[in-house]
Image 1 (cartoon, one colour):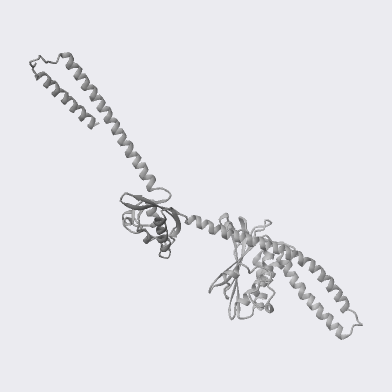
Image 2 (cartoon, helix red, strand yellow; image 1 turned 135 degrees about the vertical axis):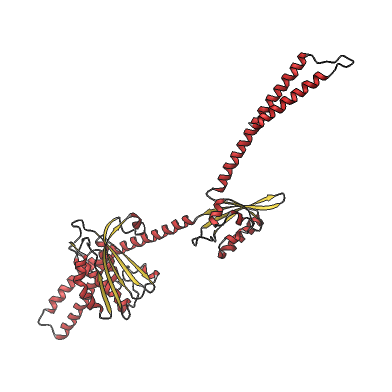
Length: 442
């Protein structure tokens, strides 16, 4: 507005001076002189030109405001874009950079300019970025790669996709670079891969369990027939001593086979059970002395019962079976002296927990934790410990069905079991059993 007023005053002053000069002019020899009408028209034209100039000035000022606002919007879009934008020289020196890229790198804009961008890439992957730059400028074609940035303030530096396109100028070449943070995407891909592997393992165990349970059920029926006939033959008085001994040896083999079949039935969830509402603390207290005798004096058994423990619905015999099998597994892991710790407590499982434990659903559970401080289990082996006939020792030292039977017992009762092992800390088995709806805490 001040500029408009100043322009109007200047035009008015110009008009006054023009009028004064016209009045001062004298008629020449030819009798030249402006009439009042001509002077009026001239003044009118000056006023029209003044208005036109004022309108042009307003349009220019409006255009300037629009350009300034457009520049602000462009700068905001450029600086706060979801990706990093950079302009680099041929040697990767940073010429221009937006704020998003500075946040990815963790360096202020003023400190990034004039520095080669390869210095902001993880040293082990710098060669990847250099090879990309060379390829872009040698072939004059856009290209991309994936690199890990060397973030100064964050040990978990972002992994980015780098896209570069060469730009030719009159005074040389540069390139435009786009940085896309794919850290979260990589985390999701890793998590999806892990969940798919877990789901595949769960389905595999379920399929093996159905197969093992079906075969074991049929085989168990045949063993019972064989055992019954052997008992009848052994009861005959006319048998000589040699035949009697042979029949007893056959019966012993059948009994051993029946025990293996029983473990297969447990793994397949085909055991005949009589579940009742019970308290795990009571069952563990009942069997703790037997576990101590089973493990020997060199292994100490410690039981820490949870307070106000919720009830579960299970067959107490199955609980004893799984504790015995886990205790025997601990005895094999503890070479000299050690400790077997058994703990119970109430646990409320939410959806977040279930997202990483696919065999569970949200709800109330009783956790039975069995921890031995023996030798640890390798990660590769840990994923297969519940598979039937999977052995970490020689064939003469076991059947490979102990932990498989534990897995089957837990799954038959709608629970879940997970194994964890860490070097120097032994192995932990976490068994989650659903809370019984028949009763509260006992």
